[in-house]
Image 1 (cartoon, rainbow, N blue to C red):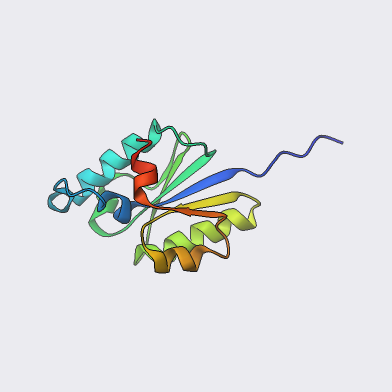
Image 2 (cartoon, rainbow, N blue to C red):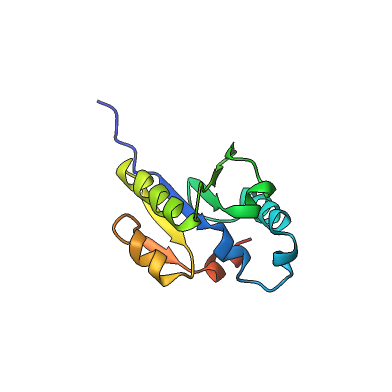
Length: 128
């Protein structure tokens, strides 16, 4: 019998919320802001096995959907919150320990059933 691996750790990122946390002109180029966030996540100092970046609207033009190293980009078919909840639920049901990054308290409350932890954008931005 092989030893059981501990559950993976998954960081689910509310891309719009994190990008919107800094008034750096992101609203002029949402796709560019999403691209910069994706690139930063590829080299970020986070203690998670997988990072799931959820993008919505025009931001989806900044990073293609799919996996790039340990970062997986999900394009929300509609509003991003539903996709974030779905990603947190899927990861938890697969046995992962889940952290959701968003300053949106209502979204954090919706994810609380599946997420072990909720953190704000500043937590993530400090690690980029």
